[in-house]
Amino acid sequence: MTILIVAAGGGLGAVARYATVLLIRSLFPSQRLPYATLTVNLLGSFALGIFFAMLFGEVQGTLSTEASFLFFAVGFFGAYTTFSTFSVDTVQIFSQGRTKDSLIYVTVSTAGSIASFFAGISLIQ
Image (cartoon, rainbow, N blue to C red; front, side, top):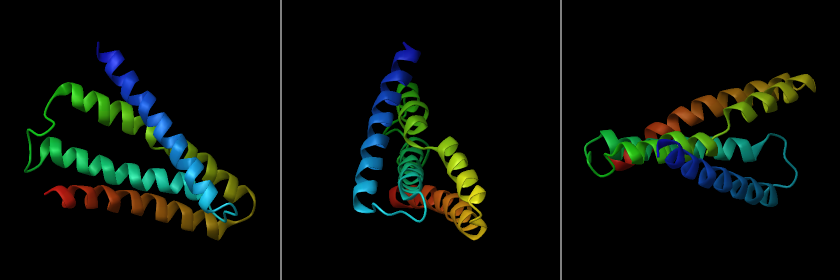
């Protein structure tokens, strides 16, 4: 049953990621940086922060089941966020001789994802 819960969350997370990527690419067709990957990582971190606050924070009990954790934290957000794609994008930007752009992308992605996670927690608490 655990595998099915994770798979269901992962399937929905993958579809949500794909939809987000299509939307961002349509809004920003000429991209200096991989905005679609950046967007899903920031949104995913923000939403995961909300989820963790609901699961473990002051409103604990709202989503306090193991199934909720498996579906959302492991499945949905595991498929929605894209650290592996972030790594590929960073290497590609760097390989094109765009060192400054790659450093900006790494900084904004990592600091922004952490800040988004905290913002999600703060929104709920």
